Image 1 (tube, rainbow over the protein chains, first blue to last red):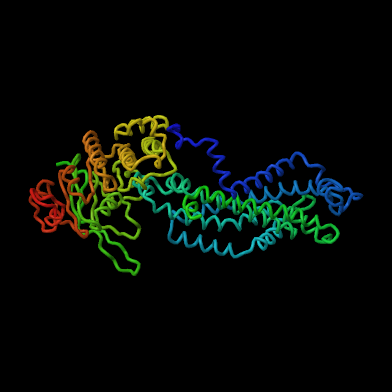
Image 2 (cartoon, one colour; image 1 turned 135 degrees about the vertical axis):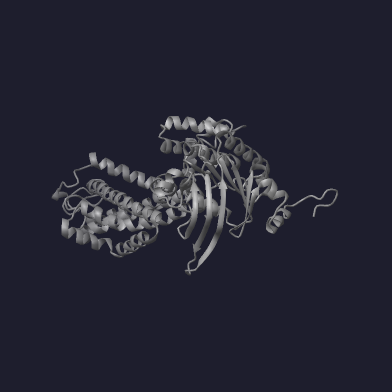
Length: 290
Length: 269
């Protein structure tokens, strides 16, 4: 039997499926995150009950007794709250990673391109930002501009910037020493062109992997912020505040704490597995080592 | 008399070492290159050949400091700003690099890598530039050029990639082409063809060529004049035939003597 000659040049869908199934991290992480994103999107148009609707007569019902996952102390449907919370958590985490990732990548590639004093200043400034816990900066921001979605996004994004700046700066420095960058300079390209055309495409793998892992971390930070009341204000349901509210009823209604906790843990696990899987997939050296 | 294409005078390059001392890398290099002429730069590893090429391109690392004159068409290249050099590099002076395996961007199709120089130096549209790129690939004798233009560097062999490198350097028809060990990383049969292509195309477009190599055979085949370098110094410069047949400098003699020879009628030694 002969294979078509162009097989290695044009990967087919079946090859792609085989690649995903051969990597359990990628597969499981992908499924968890895929389901979660779907649930979050569905919550925008449909939830079993309005997440803020209180039915005091049905308060503190265990799962399956009223609604699929029971109700909280005000008789709100837990499943609806979790679904809405998924959207709130994911959208804040994703926005924060996009903002922080963009700024961090920008600073990273700039310091790799400029080197010298510029690089030193940027990197030390990153160290300073890195030393401030995101909870603290969120509290300060909250005091200035009030708590809410925007505050949470900025607080988490600020803490993402140094992570991305470091990763991109070290990756970009490696690419700068490659021959094709010298060749590009020999062809008369300036620093900005080289960064856009040669540096960024060749470090995009690392950025994508880093962003995925940071998403998990951002979910966790967002939950922490809303647990402390620094996230989105009520009545918008967030996983962190559901956890905080559940403390009082821990003995009477443990599912109120377990379910949002499970949601947070699964999401972080999903992003971490997806990030690991992507790294194996995109980085040939990692593949060889494992 | 007209201005020579490239005039290098009293060229010194020193490198600052981390401990603050300076190490001379090139010492009093001088040569002239007329339009359409070919110059071979030969010497052992570490003799400063590649650095000379980079110095002309203005691509020395920041720790290097340069003094002397490099006059290109009467213009002093050393006095130019980096921006001014950017419009000369690629456009007026092209360069071919030693390692074809690493000198191409792995994330870009080879056709686009050739075409983009045309787009931003000459202002061509992408469609025209891509057509021109296929044309150039044909000129460097890549078969099925239209299809190969859409492939990525990893799908090509070393010889093919070096041809792409040549096509990139030739795209803008620079007046001067600097080839830094263009065939060192290739096997002998591919070497011969690459040299053949270089020879043909520089002749066709009337380009001057500086060929950096440690291979005396390559230099003898390609270059009218030869500059012999050792430890950053010019040992000898002259017509290739004279340098190779009646070397004046003891180092040149030893360099030529080091070429492995088969003794007629006897055992190789």
